Length: 130
Length: 130
Figure 1 (tube, rainbow over the protein chains, first blue to last red):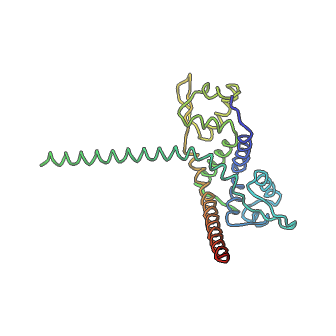
Figure 2 (cartoon, each protein chain N blue to C red; figure 1 turned 30 degrees about the horizontal axis):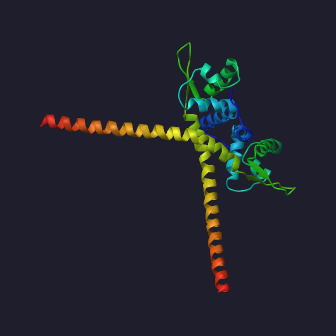
Figure 3 (cartoon, rainbow over the protein chains, first blue to last red; figure 1 turned 30 degrees about the vertical axis):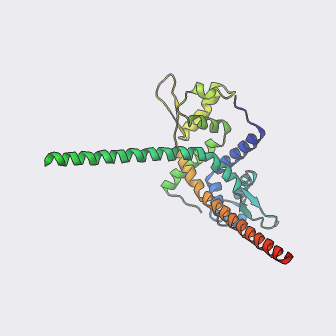
């Protein structure tokens, strides 16, 4: 049985909500838009063929996941990107990143070995011709 | 309106399926287990308090998302991790990683500036006492 302590539980819930929020292309595009700075719902809705209530639903998911925060100005409530949950997701990905970097290193070693063998073969073949 | 070309569409579907699969703690634990090598369903089910059909459902989600592949041996069908979809998700995260690295650099600069100001103040204060 897999047991979590309370710190793991919090981290696990953040990861659940973050990955779930990122599983939608509109929400990913909204986050990408917010990289360049704060934006209102109207500004965010503009590039999508979507109603304001449609965009608002996505914003609620992002806000619940802690990926955005909304300003207090009642009329505009501008949205701002929050990086912390993305950092947690990125930390989780770290273990796999190390794994594929190791694989790339192994591939590189293998290709270098092949190249050396080819050079030796070419030299031997030239030697035989002389 | 946001328009995607066919390459974007494929990439978007991979990201949708990958993030959706990662939004569950059991599936993340299964992937973590597979980092150390191939495993059968029985081996994967062992650390969880979950039935074999329960684990199998999660494996189907992971397989559909391309995050694992199953062997052909009819009896065991061992599961193996596939890194490609994780690499795509990692590439997507890259843009935010650059952003928070910039923020950390800015914070570092700010702290160094504060430290220098404190040293200057301390020197002046000592000078005044002499």
